[in-house]
View 1 (cartoon, rainbow, N blue to C red):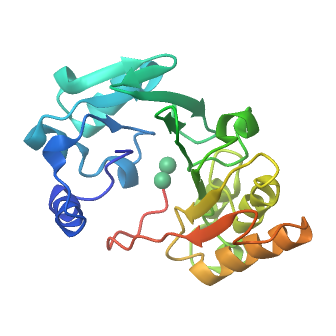
View 2 (view 1 turned 180 degrees about the vertical axis):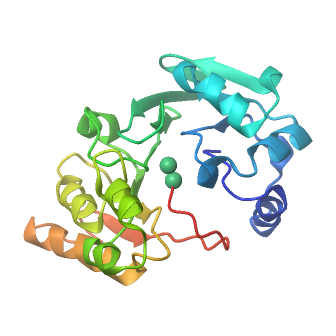
Length: 234
Ligand SMILES: [Zn+2]
Ligand SMILES: [Zn+2]
């Protein structure tokens, strides 16, 4: 599982709905220490005794911020393995000491996730190429954000190179994904206040069309928006 940004009970509900069992998890891969990624981490990992995987550069700060059990934390500083899964990470451009995206491969299928980055991370193409599924941040519509109610400082932070990918930035990436053989992309980490699923989807779809790609044939495109009642834009 990647991150644990909702409460333990909300996550347990999701597991029940999916008819899965938290106890069967082999680890939680943490991207970074912002609360929308670790809100339920401590309660959930403690309750089910699940190891927490964090980059070496992020571990100390994660432990002090989340108050998670240090004995459950497994630090990595390179490619690592959980059972038959090979796990790689890519550093993202975000306003924390270390934020990463992950790719997870079982030898046959590859899953990648990149969120919480103000710009396309260095090495992104190689990192996500040939993914069966990529979850990509499409955080905000620039116009909605600029005209919205957020304080100027928060707007500047989100728009900065250490903030979040806009629909426009995400769509520029989506346009070349068929070229690098990504089969399916889910747009995620949408701002509840500065975006809509329709805007994110349409901008990415138009970018695909302009690149001469056909959605549903060259690549599948979807938007995933999980409404857990939190209004965080971290
Ligand atoms: Zn986030
Ligand atoms: Zn963040």
